[in-house]
Length: 210
Image (cartoon, rainbow, N blue to C red; front, top):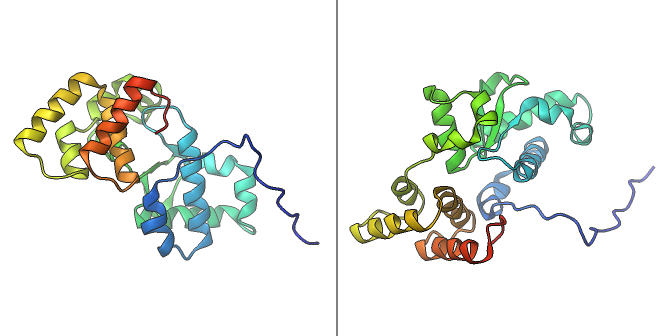
């Protein structure tokens, strides 16, 4: 029996943002369908979450019948193999032992915010329960704006430091962090690009798009 022919994307289909760097650096290196499935599924699921730190439990993957069916025979083994490869590559982060994954282990996309969350978890500043139930406390693990700029844009100059100080006054810290993440994803590592995003959000409202 042949597979059914796809009838096309509905006009009102929800769009999913995938970082541009995925197509530039990750996709050309992918040669395993388990890793491909896990990576795309993770980006899709994490994009839909509305919380400061976006993460999935390994058990969340297991509960999705469509995903597990796509792996074919012994789907749990294929899932674990795909997660292990994505974590080893650095596309995903794992809070747990990724060489022997447990259903309660956390999976995050490898973003500056996730890196900060992982550091806070490992240092004991926050617990897993606090990530989910006390999102307002995530300020304690948010990287300093100067660090974010130097890690993602360029070396910090005295003039740029003054500009960043003004930005902290004019925009919420979470906005600045997300705007820098967007600039990195869109391969436009310039402060003017980040500032344009912030201005648009301030003028038109922060709706998650740019």
